[in-house]
Length: 521
Image (cartoon, rainbow, N blue to C red):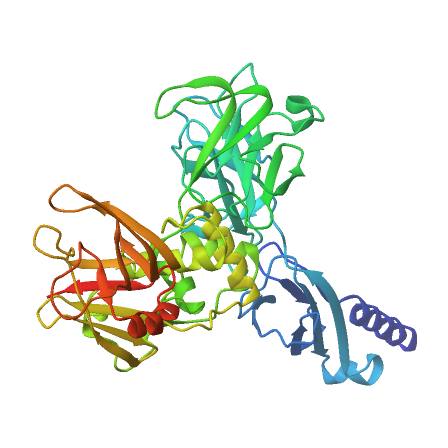
């Protein structure tokens, strides 16, 4: 009996050792799984922590440990499990058993980013493990697409003959999607096929990155040569993977209002358009839009060339070439406000944000004159480059804003307004019948302290008057200037606005190129 009792005790001890364990391991659906043997007791506590010590909340169901908040693919998690043994085993083996496991949330990878797809077939993307969530589309606009369940192959449906998309997935329902992967597809072809992103012919911003993806490795298609960009654009080519070249602009990028051409060292096959098949070429192009009128006005207001101020709704545009170039075609939201409470109503009536107007033209002319470039009132590539450079440097005009209003109704007067104040009102002479001073608003385009004025009288005779002082031309041969008359306040000129010597000398410094002159009734 004693021997039998000893054998039974030994067997019970062996059984306790064999069937009282607990294991913690990874799981195919949950983050981890804890398994407690029949004599192991019960799970007392489960804890999980991220790499920064942040607590990761879990649910425990059937031994499976599932995060309550989404984890990032590849995120490291440390799991601690405490199992409490039955009391009759606790005295021998200890009351607790602790298991620790460090693991990473799974990361699903695209098996083949460059796919050959027969005409009329759907595009299928294969992954190295089943995925539960998929989003795809263009950069920054990825769209979620429903899956019936975890699957290793995802269909993108019918797509154009060639194309590129960004696709991001999550292997588990409790994960966020990972970093997007670029996937490109091509039709069967003997020649290398190329797809561009953005698509050839599209409108792009000056700092847009140009992606060229080939059906074969870049080294096989182009060798060691690189494409040439024209017009010449600051930037460099980078080989991001074996099949893709990316042109990354630097500085202000592509010129505003230009056609950007990329010439390849060798011809490749590209799509000819909707249903047009393939054709070979060694050149593709994109359209860079001109700078927007709204952004032009924002920059001129910031620099002090307009009678309005501008404030962005959110953060200011970063003072970097790339950010300023992007804002030129995609202006930030914000609001304009008048700099002066008593701005003349005639001036206010001419202002419309986002639309070309005389106020904006005058400001451009003044900016051109201040920048020592040809004055034409047109915001071309040179003007934009200077404006963006000044915005980065934070330059601001300090000479103030002037406006001249001429009343053509007798008694005729000229009023100069500057920075919220009326500086002077003086009698003036406008054009006689047959040579009337044209009604409207015009920017000063020439500013001379003294000149000779010549032209044709209404009767056909010619005149030439030397020594005319304080001249500001604003409309053809019409100008603000001094002229010796016995009286002022009635039509006496041949279209100009004649002023007494003292008045013309006083206003001349206030009427540089770009100053607006309104001729009204």
